[in-house]
Length: 145
Image (cartoon, rainbow, N blue to C red; front, top):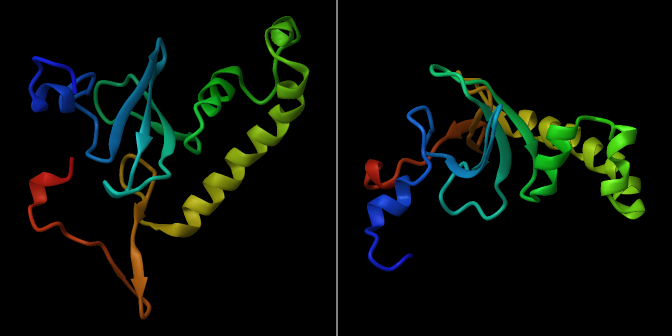
């Protein structure tokens, strides 16, 4: 933590009114922002999610796993335009299709592991025990962050 800054300021830095507790700000661009999505605070393998700049009910899209290169791939699209190929190494360009393909796998796995689709569209991660879904409630509900 930075010297002279209280804990609350650090927790809320770069947060938006529409951010959910599962979101941790990562990067911003003109179209919106990228966040780490953690279903629980202990999650050590977050998803990277893009959130558009809508004032109410922003749309979200799974961008990839925790590797920030997924953000670049999301902004570029499924194919690197010819005029930008010189910015990247040959090895990275060869791996680009695999990277983009991984996103489809991550989205499919997320749909399989979650239930319900609230307004944010990412589903809820629920632990299934004996065929029944449970979502743990913390002892102190306000202490999610």
